Length: 387
Image (tube, rainbow, N blue to C red):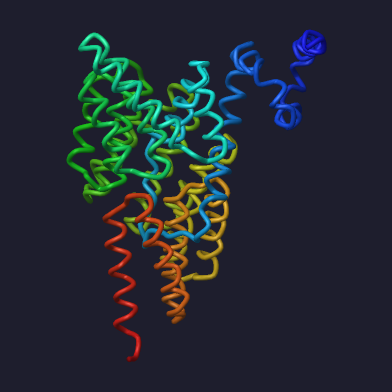
């Protein structure tokens, strides 16, 4: 490999153009495979770039694998939790990269093709092995199960729920495990359990970020429980902490959730201002998930005014963005609302098509309550059809 040392020197001297070489490196992977760890280890910037690349490849591959159209939630404002499953997924990928073992490399290559099974199997094996070593290794076992949950959350919330629960049982001081567990419980409407998980995050938090996260997510639960006064108080406390830290991402999330409260109260102008502010911040930060959530919220808000065409455009934008990134739940939300618009227009067949797609997607994602709700809507359409 006489060419390797000069190439290594060139890459070091020209790090600014390293990103442009990713496509080229993919073409010669066979030759560079023995040296792959060089690109992962050289410095933190390249480590992070590699993690982001794997994450993007995984999202793109999973979006392409979803060959049936998606489904969505019927007129429910998107409660975008600060816990953000994508951060957890990136942490899991970063942990795989740091392991630098043949098994980890194999799992990474499968992830880049959209296949999560290898990574989940590896983390399950690590968790079980550490667990079998006894109590002294429980913290390491818990970390493995948290990473398993992060990857499982892509396509199976039941599997993610089991993994996060196992992590908290092994290490009840793991704040990340409690936070992610609360996120899955909240998404599945297991509200009492979610409240317990986020209360645990609040008690374990040793910095403003975790405290702000817990307050925001407890506020989300209060919204779902219909206690808007408590929700607004909790969200404003969270907003204050995020502003103190200069945390734009957290601020964007809380603004969006405050918009949900004002939308529920019928305060159209205040809600739209909050959603617009949240959308602008998310677009500035490149936060695709937050962008999709606010597009959905704006669509729901405008739908309430009766402007079906304008609302549909927001839902279509949300769907297109979510489909590119493989965000199944947001794809579901978008199409469900488009189906609701079709129903309002009297387009029964189109409405049934969207809802049927919705049911299929919720079933695949392990969202049993949404499967039942969507099936009820399909049945209602069928009952109204002339026989």
